[in-house]
Image 1 (spheres, rainbow, N blue to C red):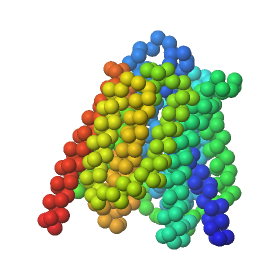
Image 2: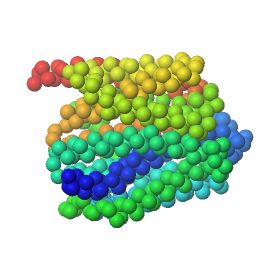
Image 3: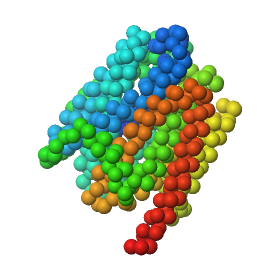
Image 4: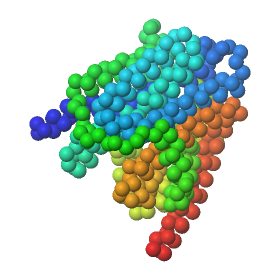
Length: 418
């Protein structure tokens, strides 16, 4: 019992790190939408052409995962070499500084500072994987490791729920007179620095043997290229990229849709994104386990839910009522979680035991780069019509479905041959 309490005390700061990492990624989402797209915010000069404003919105979304794409594998290697705690402290301080830069940029109506802050946040966003590695280091048995990893998922879910809610509510002047678009960033900075202090005094270094392997700044690109270079992973990588790009287009467009069509404030946008986070949490903790017990074939299950996700995106593109959009978001988010979980399992099954860390790095690089692409093209597509990104997401889902059918047949024939 005492050992369990000690473990919880040691792990609490790490779970806080994971919560903050996830919350920080999407905390700005409800705020960025009105900040850049509403001329009255002052962030983008009045009179700026709509197509340029839409592009800047997409860039503000895409810049975070782009820099995360470069930094995450490097930070992971640095934590192996110099220790988890040191790199986590650097990341937390870097995140706190990025939020302060964002807040100053908002107060000064400096779009350049705001975009720079998103780049800084992306560079410091490798904390989730490092904290997870530290949690594994502190788990003495497989049973405790599994239990602790379940708490990792729980921490991510709480971040998905509370992050956007905090971002939306603390930006709303109508609730508190001194709230503004800068408040969520100051709040996140305070939490980052507080977490760094907590980490400093409660966490001992978990990695006793430092790894001597070289640090490569281009590791993210090398992992991404490797996903498509190896024949065994190529088809699965392509369909996974289509699937992730579809979700990124939906997730990075739907707030814009609600603001333009239904005049959502930052507060309401935050509550909607939190609602999606609740769907994620329920699906991750309950629905996925139930579904996996019902279906024996992971490939058929992925095909079913990626097709369902395509229907949800088409439904969102066709919907003309606010309630319909909320309902389609449930189906969309549920399908996304199930497909993502299965995709990771399929990648893992194709890799041997020694390559599990490498293949997870590959999936991470695919996810980060496709999210960047999603952000960059969401703005131009939305300029044509806010329904175009949703239609595009639906088409990408159906392409992923067809590729999964091909993958299933290919995999089945190879298994028969072997």
